[in-house]
Amino acid sequence: MAQSSNATSTPITNAVAAESISDKQPVSSELPEVVVTEESPGYAASRSSSATRTDTPLLQTPQSVSVLKRSLLDDQDVHSLSDALVNVSGVMPTKPEEALLIAPIIRGFPAETYLDGLSIFGGNQQAFNPAGLVGVERIEVLKGPSSTLYGGGLGSPLGGLINIESTRPEIGSNGGFLGVRAGSYSTTNPYGDYNVTLSDKLAIRLAGEYQDNTSWIDKVHGKRVFFQPSILFKPDAQTEILFSGQYNRTQQLEYSGLPAQQALAGQLYRNAFPGAPNGQPMTDINNRLGKIELRHKFDDGVRLEASAQFYTSDVGQYGSFIYPALAAPNASTPTTYPIFPLTMPSAHHSVSSAQQYPSPRPPGTSSLVSSLTIKCGNCRARWPCSNRPATTSLQRIPAIPSCRFRRGSNAHADSRPT
Image (tube, rainbow, N blue to C red; front, side, top):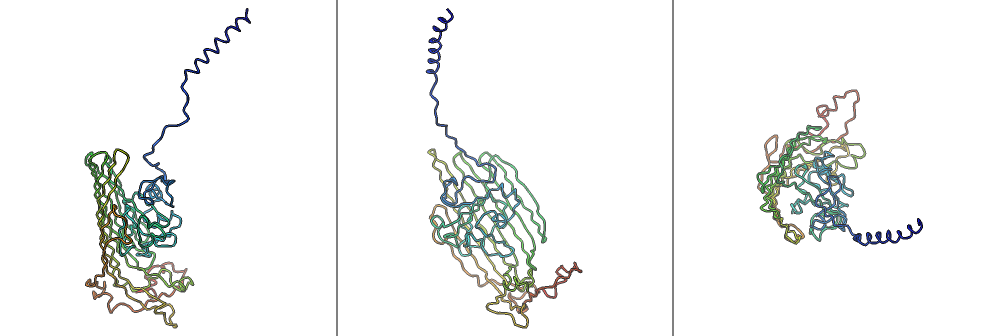
């Protein structure tokens, strides 16, 4: 009876199991699509707009692009473009305090600097150097030929370019930071960035800094002023209108460099200033720009971005330098060189738009200002004045270990440039 009961129950159990399996829905092998709209707070960026002028994932960009995010700049406590570019391979940054008008080098060629995708140069590519990074959201370095999208210029057709993206006002956010930095070479640097929401459709942002410093190079000193206001108006969820401006002024005693052969041989004082700094005016670079930008998202996923910018730059370059190839020192005094004065004031204005195809050279004019009179800081005569010294001595000063106070500038006044 037990065997008969078991035999008759097996078909019923199998039938119930088959019915249970048939009621289940087939399992799909495809996962739902996940759309990521924000980047992670880490250092790695996933998207860039420099290589294609569209918001494109870096994995789909057929060109080498390096992105330095704000999180990296903050954690490294970076305060200058030259210090930030150390993170990028194939780039040789230049320090303004050592070479004021020398552009960074990308893959062996001078690099152009763009601000929010627009050129700000024309005649003098090196005139704009955002030495400070207040008001900068990220830095994108595009390597390799890029003339298809950016036209000609200083070095972008071959080496690459640097695109600096500015911070934007944020609706719904209030706050910012104020700071003061002080350090070596009498450096004083107050700076700040603050965002204020005025309504659900309007916000403003103010960023600025001031820096005053000397240098490890004897006699070199400078100061910098930067101010960047911006206003964001958002009439609806799909439209943004941005008004922004920038004032950037850099003043510095220009440094021309030492004769390489004698400097590397240890025959010259490495910190010497090879010129006539007494009364020499500081090189003055004054940049101003204004920009308007429109962004609109359509219902079918298409996005419109249009921007226009006006940029003006006044550059007064004044200096004194030595040129051994043209005027070699006397054999009896091999470390005393003739001094050449330099006076090159100029002005440049340009208008650019992101809607136009970049021309081989940004529109604008460049001209010398011949009527400008610069006076010597000492005798008040027209620079270069007759009281300017004709030679400079770069003789190496022997170290005196027993007199540590002699490391100061007064102890070396007899043999340093005056």
